[in-house]
Structure formats: C-alpha cells, structure tokens
Image (cartoon, rainbow over all chains, first blue to last red):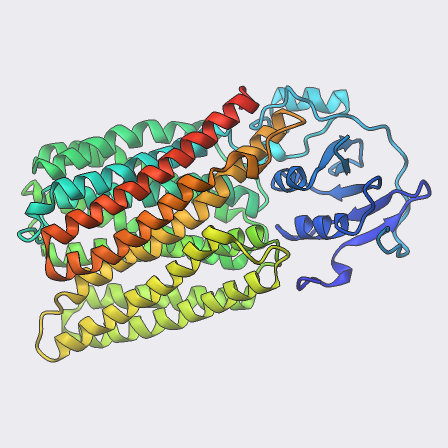
Length: 88
Length: 468
C-alpha cells in the first residue's frame, strides 16, 4: 500500500454504484497517490468521484497519461468535487 | 473489478456533471471576478487558480536557466586559456561561474519555488503579478553583472548587481510570506527558512564584494568570498534542493512523503553544518575544527536525506524514474564527493598545506556535480509535467507529459553532462586549459541537448494549446 494507511482516505460506493473517495485533509501528494491507486483497481467503464479541498492540479497530467479525465461537479461549500472517468 | 466497498460517510447527492470551463485562466483566484463568475455558473475551480501561476512565469525562469547554462559552458570554453592565472578575481571564469549559479541554478530554483511552494504548502500565490515582473528585472541585471565581471568593470558589476540583489530580496519576501502561512510540511518549511537565512547572507556578502571591487569597503576579501561561496551553493541552493526534493521525488515516484521527524532531523543537521561552516569562515583560529564538525554534520544530514529519498523511490508506484532518476542518484554521489573533498582540504591544511586543489574540486563537485545533476534530473521531469498541467486547465484533451518530452535531446544532454563532469575533474585539479576546453565542449553539447528538449516542449505545447 505504498506506505499509506487505509484510514487516510475514506472510500465508499454510492447508491448508483459510483465509487467515491474523500481525500480532504491529506497533505500533497497523498491525495494524488490514493486516487491513482484506486483508479488502478477500477474497470474501464467505471467512474470515481473525488472529494477534495483544493483543485488537484498535479493530478491532471497523471490522469491524461493513464487515459482518464476529470470534470468538476457541484459539491459542498469549500469542497472541490471531481468525477473521473476514462477518456471517451 | 471494482475497488473495495467499505461503509462510508453519507452518500453525496447525485449532481449533474459540469465540464471544466475552457476559459478559465490559471491565475484566477476566488478573489478574482472571473472566479466568482465561474462559481455562479456552477463550475468551481476550487483554488487551483490561487495556487497556480500563469505558465509563462515559471517557464521564463526555466528558459533563462536553459540559455544561461549554454552560455556558461561557452564562456568557460572561450576563457579556458586564462584559467591557470585566475584566482577568483574579476574576469571571464568568474562570469562563467555566475552564469551557472545565478543564471542556471538560482533561476531554476526561483521558478520552481514560486510555483511549487504554494502548491506544497496549500495556499495561494501571493502577488502573482509581482512574481511575473521579477524576471524582467533579473535578466538585464544578470547580463550587466556578468559583463562587468568578464570585462573587469566594477561599475558595470555594481549596476548589474543592484537589480539582481533587489530581485533576490523580493523573491525572499515572497517565499517568507508563503512559508509563514504554510500548513503542514514542517520539513520543507524548515529547509525553506534556512535557505532564506542563507539568502540574507548571500545578498549581504554579494553587496560587500561589489563594494570591495569598487574600492568602497576595507574588509577581508577572502572572508567575504568564503561566506559568499558557502551561502550560495550550500545555503540557498543546498537547503532549497534538500527541501524541495521531499516534495518532488514523492510526486515523481507517486510515493508517500518521508516522515516529518526524519526530514526535520536531516534539515536541522544541514542547518547546523552550514552554521558551523560560516563560523569557521569568520573565525580562522578554530577554523579547521569547525570545518571538520561542519563536514560531519553535513555528512549525517546527507545520509539521512539520501536514505529517505531512496525509500521514497523504493516504495513508490513509479520507482524507476529513468534518465531523471540516474541524474538524481548521481547528484547524491557528487554531494558525498563534495564533502569528502572538503575533508581532504581540512586534512591537507592540518598538515601545513594550503588545501589546494581540494577547495576548487569541492566547489566544482558541488556546483556542476551535485546541484547541476539534481537540477537537470528534476527539470527534465517537471517541465513536461508542468506544461501538461497548464494545458489541462485550458483544454480538455491536453497533451500528456510523455507527448511533451523529447528523449533523444535528453540522452544527448545526459551524455554531455557526464562527459563534462569527468573532464572537469582533471581540468580543475591541474588548472589545465586543454582539459577545460574539452569539458566545456562536452558540457556545451549537453546544454544544447537540453535546450532542444525545452524548445521542443514549448513548441508542442503551443501547437496543442496555443493559449497556455
């Protein structure tokens, strides 16, 4: 687990089957590592919703490299919420 | 296959996707009217803008580093014949050295720290417009400073030093404001404060040396040179690269950052080493003992740092960093060689020698070997990454970092850099113009390779995302 504890990010599946990860409070680059690690376990047609406290600017080039892309979706005040899916 | 499904917090309300606003500019902040408009429209770029400078700001600094690197080797080669007679005074060898230190190393450090520290410390870039303006004062100042050194014109030197030192002070203030508001990353913050303290000494010693060359300051030139030589490569650059490595290497390797306690131990030892070395320069009576203690602390700090970084690479999702990783590992070896040469100088002086050529070789290992290798190892990885990141903010289908890199020019750079280092050792050790010329040719080829890589990246970025 690349030196990270499981309790460092909350992961759950919503009623619609979409996986969510909450990385708020983690120092950089741990959110990116958690997100990429989780994406590595997902099916090609799956999506991941990320709950973040800031726009993860360093994540986007990594996503591009792996063939994923992110879009912002409305979230709670002070939250940056992203939906990550494979490039169409 | 899906990931595990632990019981989680309350499920979020389903929301419709809102695409990334292609009109968003990287420097938009929550305080900026455009950011407010985006929020009203539903797409919230949550603080990216605040922590990101326009791409042109760091890229200009990196571009300066690329050009100055090429010029440094060129000036060194052109002035090779004067090398045996040079003992640290004004003339082209000093100009070449400052093209390498101020033009290449420090310019890259400024560009990287302006962009990386706000991201790492999770806060907004302060005065992004001022950060952009610094380059415009620095470049002409540096050009005049270098010309003044090369042509031995103290008045030009003073005129060029003024804007350069002013920019360094302004950069120091920006960095201090960022460090003061940092959240987390205590190891990086400690290294940052130590680098800023060294920056104060660097600026003061530089101003004093300029005054000395203009006949305005009756102070020991040797002491000032020693302080200047410690504060620049070991203080400002050394502490910055040690601190920023704790951010960058985990990011490259996709690994957890080293634990804070280890970073703080390494940082405290490095700071103590620097303080002892400065004390040795100021107190020649106990100089050898203090220098020995400084070297011991420096070696312990380096060992802790390298151990932590090796663990990062071993545990990362991307452990093999390729050519970049090789240069970074070489830089650690050269840092160790610097300390060993420093020890050689102490031993030689304790036996009645003058420490020659250990001091010259140690300086060469530090500037070209340790800092130069680390810088280009990091730059070749971070430049395409940074470019892709900015393109991704402006365009949905942005080029990947791999699509923005150019392996062949980087291979040329690596070969040239390694050959130049190997040739510099006999060149500096024997004060040999022939070896120095050969080293400068090899280094120049390597620098040209890196320049082609940088130009290729900018060209590809411009083609893919013209507005970045």
